[in-house]
Length: 349
Image 1 (cartoon, rainbow, N blue to C red):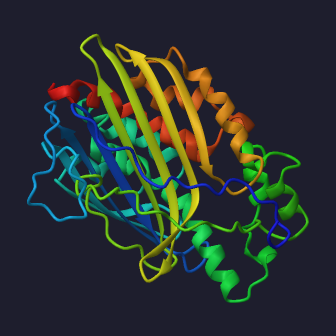
Image 2: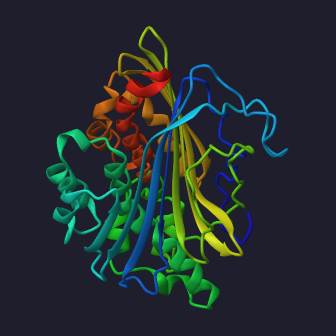
Image 3: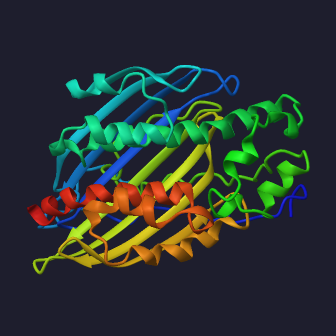
């Protein structure tokens, strides 16, 4: 216990795995914030990169700085990179978007609200050949970024002395109860809000750097500003000559504390294996979660075994629902839907 709130998981990853020879790594991030109030406009910035590590496993040469491990593979090829800037109005409708590289179809997304309909609209307007592209993946994360941005507002408001119960938007319990494992009936969050105490504020642990001294571990990600929220992902894919594949993935939601410091709100890691694009096993590892009821969602991910990886964006939404789900874990599992394309480019393919 800290301030009377039950403590859930507070064990962020200290690092991501070292890149393996013949693997492909997809890294992504979306920054959002800060909200001035529940109905304030939101600015978002996101980037992503696909990086292939050569199959010969070439190590960093001897003339690199001393803080770079000499066993980190340095034979790398950037397969794709994207950057997105977007603005959402007070009703959470997309009012501006610019991308690098430019994609003409993004104009058709303008006016779409950052809710469930946003992703459905993407399915309609994104060309089939870009359905699992980096750009689609970054845009797909923006509704989730809008959702987590509320935590930054609550921290800022409490810092200014507002009572927690006054920070809840109207009808929050009607929308959230039994939506996921952490917001189940009788759970910590629901009981606290029903009692007029607002959302229990977790003691967020500091965010480890997650680079391991590897200059290629991530795409370029700048410092996170005070009260901004960040969602980042890392997906590693390896495939063997027999078509067997292995995936390691993680996501982390953080909030800026000033001075470049970040603390962790949500974090999960996932391991999956299979053959010829079909999942044979999948395990979710909770790392940082706000409420004691949250980790139970990890027990349900085995229901995805037997699914095609490329179909996960739709299968996850249909299979993991209600208190058998975690909204944020579901988003990570949905993001694995792009792995079908990564598999074809791993091991030098």
